[in-house]
Amino acid sequence: SFKGGRGIIRVRLFFFFVFPPMRPVKPILRFQHDRPKGARKAMDQPKTPLLLAMRIPFYPIRCAYDPRPLLLMDDPALIEGYFAALRREAQANDEDVSDMEVQAMRISGGIAGHVDDEALGSLLRDMHALYAFSPGAEITLKVHPGMISADTMSLCRRGGVTRLSVDYATSDPFESEAIGRFLPPSVMETSRMVIASFPVSLSFDILVGLPGQSETSLVRTLQTVMGYGAAEVVLYPFRLIPGTPFSEKTAPALEKSTSPRKHLPNPEEQQTLHAC
Image 1 (spheres, rainbow, N blue to C red):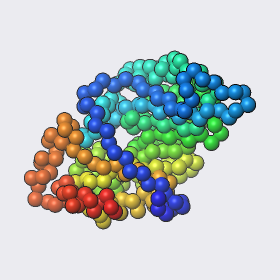
Image 2: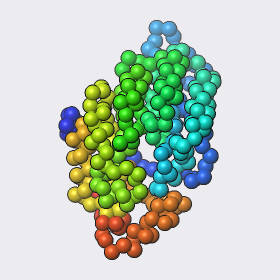
Image 3: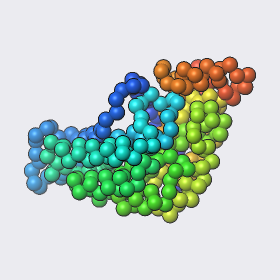
């Protein structure tokens, strides 16, 4: 943790799991609780905490460095069908959750906040109808800088979303361009103004080990998100995953460049970044 614009900021370090690039996509709703299957609590006991995780793997464009199976946002029929399947999966849950209470729900897997406002709003309403949420339940939605609209934020408010998980990566335009991000980091300034009037906390995903990244640029990125009011920063190591377009095409081309800003950090530089 470190101190930011809104007090203490939580920092977490995540590690990528390597998924087969061509694994088929299917709706996923995960339930996590500590109650043995089939067991029930007495009426006078507190409800069992329930955690929900929904996977909505839609992206505006193909991500060159992400090995997970993703879907594009260019097919309304596919989006409608996916949300319908996810809703059926929630309704078909065979566990008795009447003595459980949702304490946290995370909606991610892609850029879930920008797929379809109407479909997402309907899904949030259904989840509140199907499950009991605690008064202080934390509901997290994955979003992308530059794509956050007032309509999306109104939907979040009606659906009880309390946190936006921002797929930010870096504040450095050279690092962003090197990995093929489709919008520059500066678009977060516009998103910041849209978010300002809504009562949500912000979590930022940052990539460590990007081409041309230095200790100075990483610190600058952390300072930038602190300025945006980050309540949490999640650090992900950037890795070359075999079979991804970045690993097969982009990385070899970057290594041939004469500019050090386009090279991936060497092992010593990687250690410096992770110790930053």
